[in-house]
Image (tube, rainbow over all chains, first blue to last red; front, top):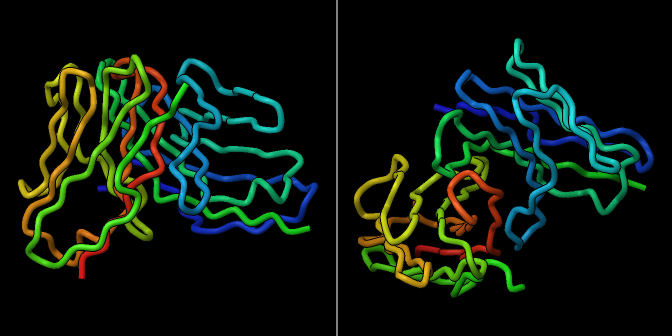
Length: 114
Length: 112
């Protein structure tokens, strides 16, 4: 049962434009959300996160938006660069848990072309 | 500061064999988790260890097991390998359960 869903397996964007990656979740007990970026033959690296008490978090070119009522979050990358080409994973953690388990989506392959 | 180190990076095994993968967490990190990544399946949680105790386990058969040592290093073992066990196995560490999680580069296991 996939509790975190990334329904777009791939996204192709021109350099300089905005990339929007989407993520939906079904478990209302999630209270912390993260985005990881993964290049081939490397482990995932942390990109940005957001707590459920916020609806937006920015870090440079990356912004994550959270819509709790829709159980939806999105990652915006502006402007997109060719080096951003990677697989992006959305992940969530459970409220009230001291455990570190992350629930992951299946990932979206972002390709930024010149 | 060294990151999460996994050994070996690549491994080829035959069906029915067993395999042990190793993970050294970031210095000072006491929580270690393991994930399996297969094509199109995202990262599936295997188990989490903290202070040598397994605190959480994912939905995998008993052929998958793990342990954590007093220095926080961890190993996972897969017995009676099946073709479907071919995957990238990722180890992750954090200071404690809910703090930021860092991943190693993974061990690519191929079962033939």
